[in-house]
Length: 379
Image (cartoon, rainbow, N blue to C red):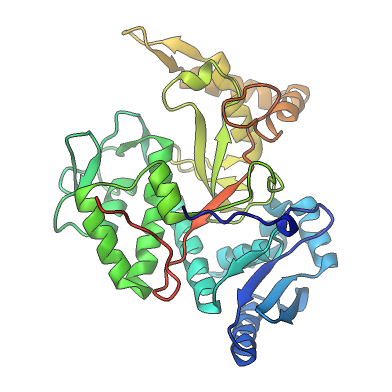
């Protein structure tokens, strides 16, 4: 399982931050890696606001305390874009690096090269999330010339169809008459896989080839996707601060209402954090979610459970939209809903006083050949 468990010393302390740690195998290697990071920080106009310290295993970098308090009080990285936006091509990378430098737990990288690869993956994840346009339907559809269903109903890649092209075709329909249909869980998997595969094409072609062959036989999805391809940050027992988000994170909003969470597709909502306080809305690309809107939407699922013609429970999205608009128009009701929903979620199987905010975040596993920990089981 590729899950980064925190030691006791890693637990988030509201009064401190850990930042990022980059390993160096020798003093010379540490010095070279630190110089390379400083060069990147200068290019991003961040160097004056960063403090570094070397140790026997590499070096640590983090924002200075005064900068952290000014840019992201209480680890609220949703404010970073407003502080850092230059309106240039480096805005996404600048926000990602600043958020990592603010981390409440040590964000460790095995080398400065892997750190840079992970930055590229996060930028590519954000880019893909912005371009993704889908229909929400648990009876999913894919472009037939790239994907076929296997005997278990899962979508496998047609032999010879390049994985990266097939993922783009499915999630970024372009001139297709209508978007393809996904549930939110599978949609976030495709977006993250596209970014991982894109980086593999740059820096680890053998990994891309393994992904290609695996998806031609059996897709990696659900728990296996999480365990094989991703790192999880934070734990249920030591949750991350609710508003500490890094662009490119995969984030889960749990439905805390037990009855409506039984409706297929509404157990919760998987989204990609795009930065600037916005989450990808694959179903209405021009209307990204804010934290406020996503919490209120999930809250109102409980008020929109209806029966379809076959008697199966479903959620009336038009009713959800109407109720969300009414809540947002009433400041007192908005505050009341957020007071409940912006609590950390209850633990698995519990529906009590928790809200919809998850305790952990997910990002890509290591991809460079010398560090790769993406494990692909035999199909």
